[in-house]
View 1 (cartoon, rainbow, N blue to C red):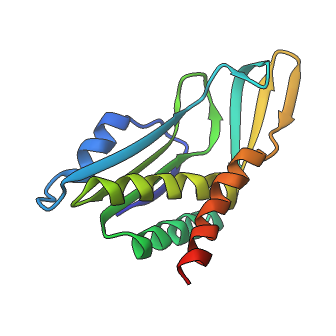
View 2: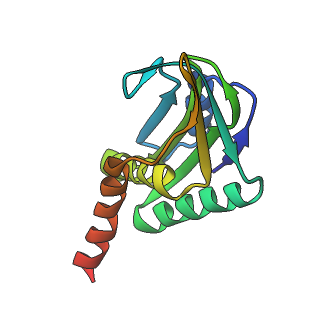
Length: 156
């Protein structure tokens, strides 16, 4: 299980292959790969810059991963996140969860992504054709993460 924050590009296919290599108990692997897109809120994006706090970011990612491991019977949970300048179409984030069965892997991957969007200390700056600006969090991301907390309350 890995947590990596890096400036270097990565190959999502190679990352996927590494997730289940040598793990004979894996029956399901679910992945999410996020990419830099060319438009956001009707503005043409030229480049994206991701800022973070080294050390603090890795701890926050590990906490999110560990919470997923407590909630579901996972064999593995991996998070790789880029920082620094990113060009269009480059992968930004890779999350992979593995388990014996698909339901745990699907739920855990979605949980990790929802919490990455709301709890991880990353800041995005978009460079557009009209200037640069820091990106605010989205209400839809907050609502997505809140459902996991609501589910916790229901099970208590």
